[in-house]
Image: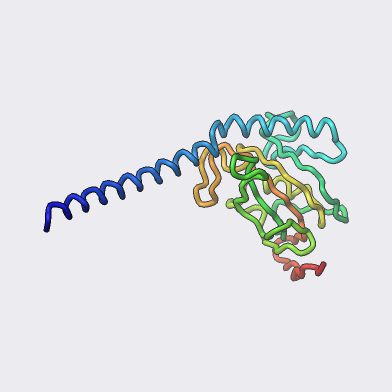
Length: 212
């Protein structure tokens, strides 16, 4: 092989390596900037929700984690905040041992690339709709559910549509959930509609979304 060709191959190889390194570094920088000061930003965001509750107590709820002592005031992060968007009907609420059928969209607080917050899980696509969204069923006592999610559903009535704010302490804590793309210390925001619920051993009716 000619010396000229060897030099060209060497230069090409070096350029490819440099390109890979630049892409890798660029991705790392982008991820770091997306979640820079993430813990502090989430703590400040959650703390600001108390102002919303104080200014409009008729529309906002503050609910203590179901597994904690309800006879005393707890820490700020022992509570879930919920903004009532639409009120349902009836007086019954799910019990801890019940199964629920819900419509939801879960997202993070706003960040550099996501003005409305990164969506990490949902049953709807496009505009959130309590009337036409797909549903998912959960058993509230399941160990797979985060405490904040289980807590708020035990206070909802059929047809309630709430925007729920869960502190990281009642979510995934300081540990990253890499599968869902949720960094540690994340406040979780859910648009959440309780469609139906049923006790153990009883099957819920089939859900048919309404046509708009």
